[in-house]
Length: 316
Image 1 (spheres, helix red, strand yellow):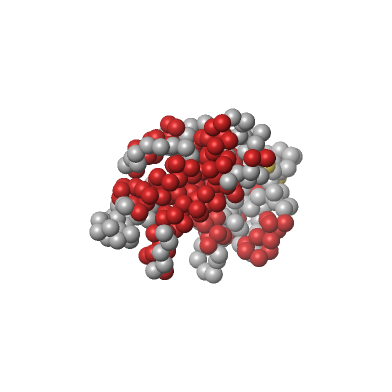
Image 2 (cartoon, one colour; image 1 turned 60 degrees about the horizontal axis):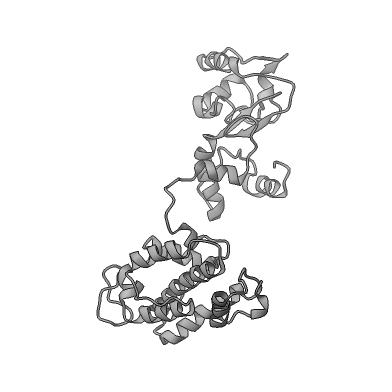
């Protein structure tokens, strides 16, 4: 990792003369670089340093001392007391395979005691993630630091393999009630207050869209409240069969285009009739499944392909 082009660029242009662990987070920094720097305390909890011969670790600033740096524990004074400069390496206080801190201050005497259980070897240094022997990867880091919650019943409705990313993200936001103003008048001018439950699907406009989309899915039933629509989808679109995939794509596309229409009316004062929203949903679902799907040669799947405009020649 240290020899990667990105790391070399970071050292040359971002770190320059600073150590990664002490680089300030103020100044003219990009948002992404600042966020990386702000994550250092969290990362340090899971990084394990093995000094080896001490050739590459900063004596003062790398957290090789039981997860902390010498500078963080003892401050600037200890650097002055050793007579070494700020660029000193761990190897500079190793003599003949033994720790050899100058005994010129109480802090240095304490340091000499602290390092006795840190092994020294002729092997090169190593850095491990979370446990000795485990290399760092973004996947492992994410699994360690992410906040875990219970699996929600609608997970597969949103994050299925055939999802359209922007649709899935919009649906996820709506399921978390992000962006809906709870005290404003409905933008579709029905005279009611805009709430999540009203927008999906109690407003006179949105049920027309959803009813037509359901009919394209060969589903004919009354429109339910938002909570029960999500529950119905979680139950009746649970699986990887063709008709389940159609329902999940159609649901997410409907939510996405209704939300776009809501914003279009709110910010651009431009209105589309509900039939055009249905056509936009149909185009997106058709486009996703146009070049490959798992439909079977049966009446149910044939009917769905006709409804959505998916070429029959693509049927498997």
